[in-house]
Length: 262
Image 1 (cartoon, rainbow, N blue to C red):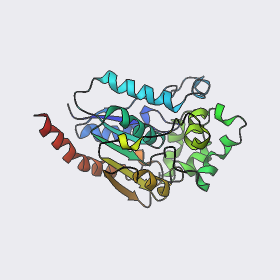
Image 2 (cartoon, rainbow, N blue to C red):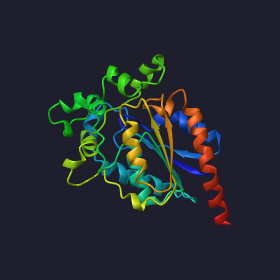
Image 3 (cartoon, one colour):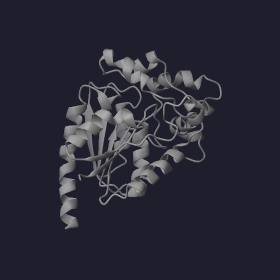
């Protein structure tokens, strides 16, 4: 069995959103696990179930999910968007072999509210008690802010796969100065593994300028920038190339770990 890989999905997504990435990694011998976060499913009452979920509930769930797998080797953790923030937090708890952050959301302490990000979340912010309301972008909003960079003929199918997201988790993430519990905080000094970070020049949800600030928090960091890509790097025209590059980056750490285990 290959190295275990835990794939942490982002806002509005489910574990199924990782299919393209999981297929690539499985073909290269990795053992992939892509759990859906709590209340991220296709049930009819999903918006009601998810609306008050906290980032801390998500994090605790992910930790339990990893512990239940009883991995013999340290896992590789991959996170996209909000999942990139959760992956950073998770890496302080489970000591992974490596941490891979694909267009990650920023932790507390980094101002990520650029004009594009505010515009993307404006309908939710104007919904009244937004921190208590589940939200899902309109199709037009998803096309503009999430799927730019993906061929237009695939947008509708991608949109139909999205679910509602927690208003509370979104508040904790985007408005961390008002969150006294600091649910989006990351103790970066506790992340001891190598870190690979992907940023994209046309990303309107986690802009490259914000992602660079995330990367600077880590000492063992490799940064890869794609100037022409948007946010949906988990299934766009360059996903295969990106994942093959990441696999090449991982090999020395896997080999070193294998030698140390002998």
